[in-house]
Length: 316
Ligand SMILES: Cc1ncc(COP(=O)(O)O)c(C=O)c1O
Image 1 (cartoon, rainbow, N blue to C red):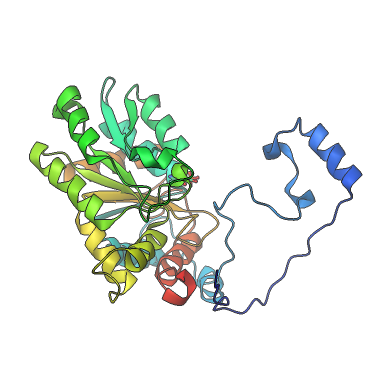
Image 2: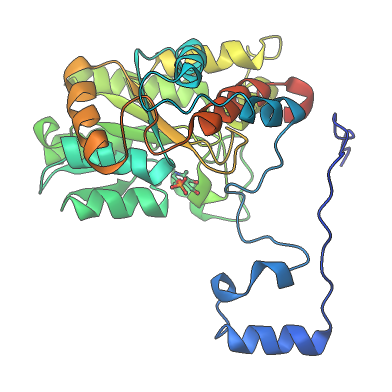
């Protein structure tokens, strides 16, 4: 494989502690062999998760110093809103402290017991938040996703035929929205093709069901579309993203991935009634709509990270 060098310089370092084999043995025993219980400072190479672990850029750190911590109407919120509207194209932008909070405010507002949410594969917090509302979380990824020996360019795709069967069996009135997770984290971070998203949209149009993206790794997914899907080779990733999100009615995102921040998330959507109801819930559990559980400085870092993640050298 040919890896280009990283298009950035590193100017802050954090020392890494080394442990002996005996210390690691003891640490693992003390943690009950549960890696979530090992103190992080004892871990030399931490592969637990990609979530919230990225280093921020100089511009993001500079943005942190420009935090407007006013309770209402922080200027950082307005910058963040402009960036999200520009990239994702949805009208209402609702910040949350991380992805699962966006899931919670949407699902607790819209889902009712007995309803069903199809997805290519629900991430674990997404499934938990659906089931917490006594609704069914249905995974409908293509069957090849479960075969580790099968190589496909878009192994995260939705099985569109099974989606339609599910809608017919469950009934559209019990499916308030369908989700597509890009990339498909629980299937090994595999991407979803534009053709598959378009086909999903066509099915949903027949039944009047909205489509929401779980957009954690949207930039990576759009980069894979550019690299692997016919017709996209010459398109900027930003344009690919615009085309993709136009096929949906909203998205939710843990910005701890492609937002390149250590904390943050949001929900963005077009439906005014849902946005109003979700905002009421947000005030109850997260905070005022112009900070949603974050500091002004976090919103600024997130706004800058969402722009920077589309740097094509970085994505490559
Ligand atoms: C695809 C996906 N959805 C949702 C989440 C939840 O986000 P958070 O951990 O910020 O609550 C994650 C986190 O790993 C994720 O990967």
